[in-house]
Length: 350
Image 1 (cartoon, one colour):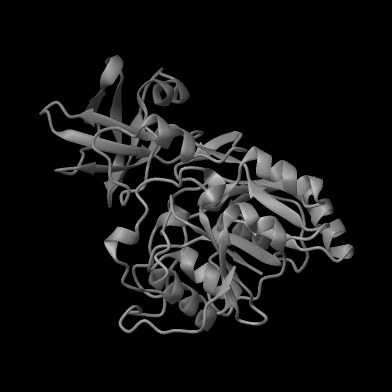
Image 2: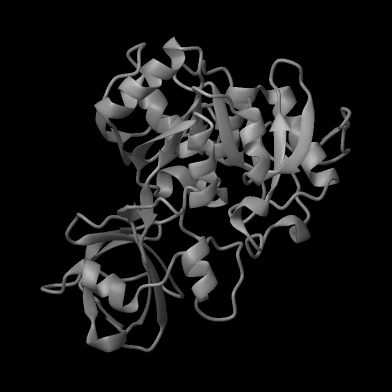
């Protein structure tokens, strides 16, 4: 374990939440073992920053602390098809429970209302308008969407993870938390990717319990800020915070323990459920955008990855850790050659 002094990397920051990251620091593959990712430990009270391995996270958690995990499961939401002209169409299905299915798509030309898109294995869908801004709806007719995705869908790796061809079997396994159980996300809650079942069991044996909530990750999480933080509006995502979790969190805090959110999605769900001033059960859509200046009510510590510049996720981290400390941590992460983004390393902010 080592303490790193404050530093400043000239030219790293280009805006309040924008920075330049060397391409070679964008992780293209996960660590050989989940819990062998690096872990940067950031102490908000002292400003100290230490470097460890994720498997050692228990040394910073105490009996009575309560981990909160997002149990959403990434679905094989990416489809590749073609138009009658032969032009390629890539579609990302955004919701499993809506008909026709909302999608984000990429094609050399704008899709047309009532156009037919052809997929492998004899599947097809009719485009339903409006077709605006790379969005449309696909009508798969009598075909069950879950069956379509299971048959021909791909795990939707982020665009900064480059593959020659389809995602590998390793991708299919590692772009999923070990506790994922509820289908609904088109991106992984990546802070949870570092946990193994064995690590969770070891933490529980030390008195660190775990509770689950659900937030289905969609465009609300990964759409970048295109204007200003003040003007940005997040697209709603569905979340659930159960009475069981609320009671467990209350017990932990009553006994001096901390609520440790594993990932920014857990923070957003918890803070949505606490908007009335106290944590209460909640089920429904949330478009809560947490940014610097927001006082968090329901979270005492945060496990998170290193996020994209200009992202709402980086705004949330700054809201929790403070802008100056977050910037210093990111400067140090670049200097220490941490691996960034979904398959990258982690931070524990206490």
